[in-house]
Image 1 (cartoon, rainbow, N blue to C red):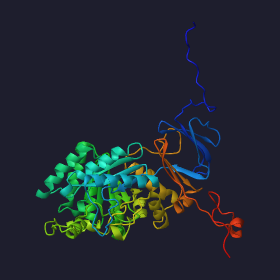
Image 2: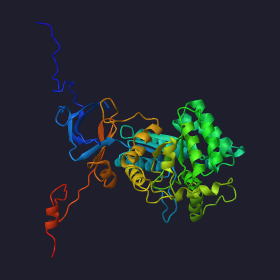
Image 3: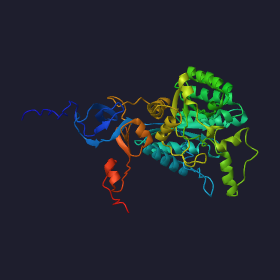
Image 4: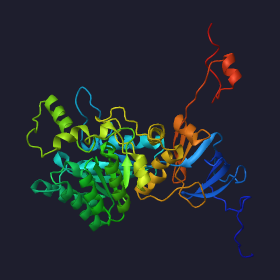
Length: 453
């Protein structure tokens, strides 16, 4: 009997090896106007060719009528406080089970909008100690393969006698799996000491830093920039809405200092975030339930935590001024239906829309703030619709980026080379002469019937 010889495997017509797990995106439009096929394999973009040029081995997905973009990323979320907007019974529970459930639901909501990576600020300390962090990390594990969630440890106090527990918990949070260190220096009795403590522990563990600050104190901001300049893998600040309230010259000098230090600013066009601390809200809930309040025991400035960072509700960081100075600008969503924004959507495309419509940015730059710049701020690999790049993609029905930011209804989200979320919107018009004459777009057969008299 002749020796068995390996048989050649069939090859696609374009010369690439057959892959039954590959996903071929057919007829997608790119921002440069080309219509292409894109083959994904093993979590990466394997090939990009003219429409019809790539053999469909594996799954074929028709993207005719869709604009294909690098997927957004969410650089500033608060998963532990998401979906806790006040009800008649008071604020939501912070038991580990409830926090995990809300964090999971919030991440899936944002994934449906297109964000395949999420950085969530999680409060540690006080009554829950590390309970919220453990719950969010458990949510991260349950979401593996759907979206990438990174937790930011947010201690309340780090200086003086009251800060000793915060320092210990910050180190413990890193051991648990927190990938980023954060917090709010503005609300510590010693803001410079707070920032120095965070940066020092981050340097010990090689962690990035992501701090909340309003940015309305130029002296404090200059000190923070000076301290942050030498830290790698980098420092992010946000939402910095207070910069917009400084005199133009003062703000420009502060922007130059941030640029020189390599600091990234994450703005929140959809509104501020109150999820870092909710002391007043929790006291209100306790009073409603007959619990004892803690008024009079708070450190200086703690009363501000219940309503969000000072001034954040009045505006957004001056993105044009910061960009002109060379500061990298990313945009996040902030609150997702918590007490500081009960109608927060957590939608990166809405953040980009607001930057374009109210912030004066070009649509392409506004989208980059929630995609490329956001990923860079989060330390994630760059994504382009080119061979070799990660298959983190968002397909939105539309032809141009301006239209996508205006009417981003139907979306297909791709994470690690597979479709993980899909939202379909159908718009129809009744059978009227006007609708027929204008050839208004439809996505299905009309069921509305003829118009009435």
